[in-house]
Image (tube, rainbow, N blue to C red; front, side, top):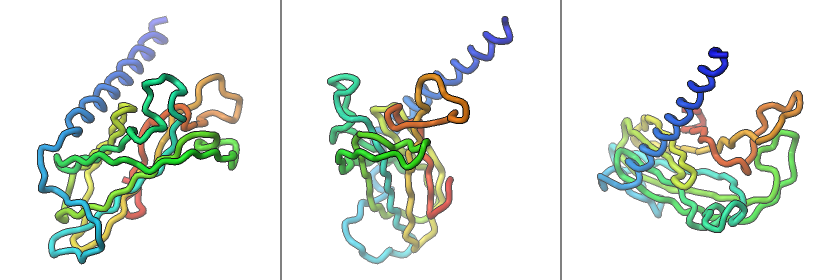
Length: 196
């Protein structure tokens, strides 16, 4: 009996610890402590010596507003993506529209009716190593990465959503099915075509 209880207790402590780490990272990253790390770009001006450009994009899907509670901001413009690079923060508002995708297979995590968000921002910053945090504060989700950017280069950083597992009893052969309806559990971060 102890062999069953102890691993279950350990898994619970690990899960709670992960949530606590995300919450602390979100609190720490929500406010700018610097303003000289990056500048937002509106035009395609040439990259100055010693600098680099970084295009950050993400496309993700959530449930419609009001499905779980009236205070739920999913499906509204208030649902934001937070980016913090070396202590400078920007909160991105996404463009959103209703979407109903027919399943493209048995394991399509974005099939069904929901709200599609598209986030994007062009930044210019000094070339070199940077610590970057991506967060969806309203989902309690934060991901931190170290990136190295070469001078004079235009870089692409894509955040691909990782959705949670569907609830309920799984059928044989259908384990590990995820759905946007279950919420985000993380991001796959891809820098210039390579996962980091």
